[in-house]
Length: 299
Image 1: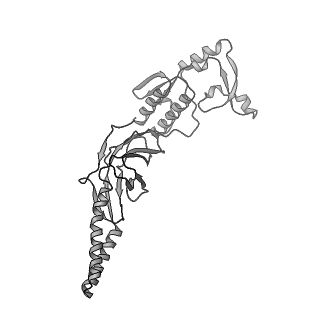
Image 2: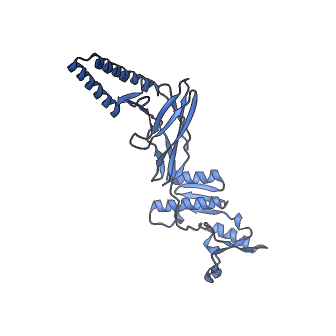
Image 3: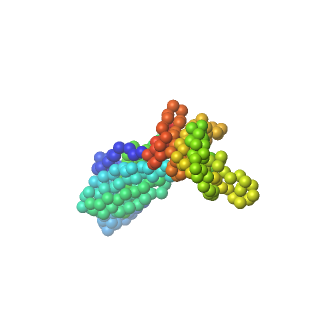
């Protein structure tokens, strides 16, 4: 799911600036030089002190100008599964004729920052990674854009209120979860098996294959795990029902249903979906699987 687009233009009114540790050390150096000049009445030291002080105050203007005029907008954030990293995409647009150097973007200054240069009248795109641990909507922390250009004496920054969020699906079960069968699917499968050319061979077991079709005799002989293949079997519809997911907790049952959706979609099967009061009629394809996964994420 993508949220509505939003852009933030940086200007003098919404940019904050404070001295860095290097800047504070620079101030102490100027103070020390002034003290020496006062004690020894040395005009050259006075001149050096005033020159450094002028550089200090001029740097404030240049540091702010390194961000002023940039336009930041957010992009589309793809849904992810719990446990994966969600990606927040942002675009930095420099519509001015001035190139911007050493612009830093990150979640906060204590974490790894991405440093980029933005050419004049060009755009740069960045991806910020967020760790996910549970399903549902993840409201991403607002990133911070900052710059210490040109001398590192000041840090100008702004926290970007982009209101970004991404949908997090349940973590697919890591266990072997055979797809469920229902009466309707069994009847259709039985009818298919009664026709001509019913059984046409064996194939290696794949995740999602029905446990009823496993060739146990070959498995007992140590020949490997195979499943019987029937003509017309692919036309059978199955239902993925929350009540059929056997697990100790709600999250585990949702995790199993997530695995079912992925396996059924990968096998190209037609499947229906039942979750509490929600019923999605049998269908197949990416759009159908997304509806099912969204329902699991927001349950």
